[in-house]
Image (cartoon, rainbow, N blue to C red; front, side, top):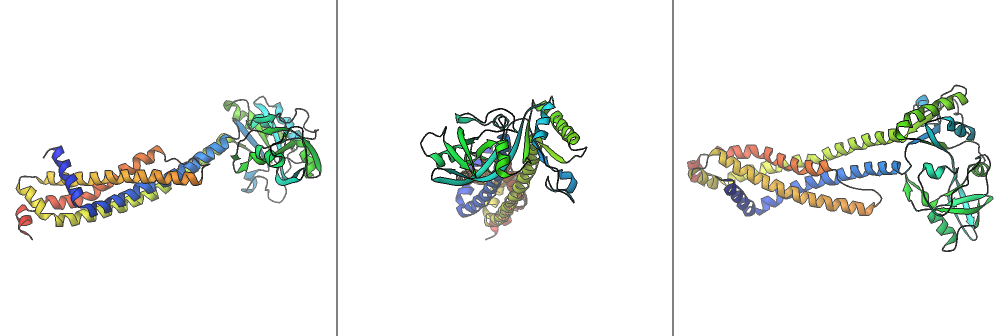
Amino acid sequence: MRLADLLEFAWRVVLGYRLRTLLILLAMGIGVAAVVVVSSLGEGARLYVVNQFGSLGTNLVIVLPGRSETAGAMPGVLIGKTPRDLAINDALSLKRSPAILRVAPLIIGVGDVHAGSRSRETPVLGATAEFIAVRQMEMAQGHFLPEGDPRHSQPVCVLGARLASELFGAKQVLGEWLRIGDRRFRVIGVLAKQGQSLGFNTDEIAIIPLAAAQALFNTESLFRILVEAKSREQIPFAKADVEEIIRLRHEGERDITVITQDAVLATFDRILRALTLAVGGIAAISLGVAGIIIMNVMLIAVTQRRKEIGLLKALGATGQQIRLAFFTEAILMALGGATVGLVVGKLGQMAVGQIYPDIPFDAPWWALIAAPLTAIITSVLFTVAPARRAAQLDPVQALAKR
């Protein structure tokens, strides 16, 4: 029996038993679609985290008060005492390191912003002139905070694009005065639209000089220090220098946590990849269920098609050819189910993407290959028993039995 004959025979059987074919296509399609959709969710989450951390800037080292290893908890929580605060002088001292290009100390709070009759509560960042370069942000209008000694400030501010629009509407923003808390600031710049970054909307922030933020929030301590290494190769040296410089300033105590952008990305990447594989594997179990359905249906088909099989064997078909006919039929249905599943899975992925447009849902390449391949292998494996039973039928008994 030629390959063309096998394909034609299998195709006619598939079309002849439409209900059975529909059930198998449905089972296979659901399994493949589940793998595609679930893996795209996991991959989308991974890409979202990678993109969000990438938007923070390049060659980034983040310094936080408190040492996470001390208490096995969040940085800044020590057993028995409050960790030493980070101060402006700590940040300035880091510029001594030859591996560090820029240093941007930060203070973060929430303040009531008033401009004329309009007001709203918004996040307020105290920063220095180097912050925009460290974070790789761009200006839409005006310029960023002026350079100079961060311990002294001018009453100026920079607004996010959406905040500027809400406070001043369509009129010119630059040069206007507003009030944050009990202090007045003149708007000297508006940030270009950037959107969400790690759950923080940079379009809705107000940025003021660091010393002004200290006075506004009545605090001397920094929230964190952003450090930009001179190159990717210099990141380990910058991290070591930060730890050593702060240790010497803090009387020999290692009371800070220094994390690198690459380390955070690598950790999240490993976790989310493992999660995607695990959840994708769980979804793939449905393909095993589909295989059991195929085996049951094929076993029933052997009983229903005894005369057909007996006639083929009476005409000279060998047991191997009978097995090949069953395998060809299973592969055709698996391919059909995989195609349906890929289409449905892609549609589901697009639907979820419409609901959450900020997350780049995209099924990984291995899922698009593994799902249909698993469907085919599952179909063949679960067709072995029915095909063997069909091949062992005696043609005389098969034709004689009613």
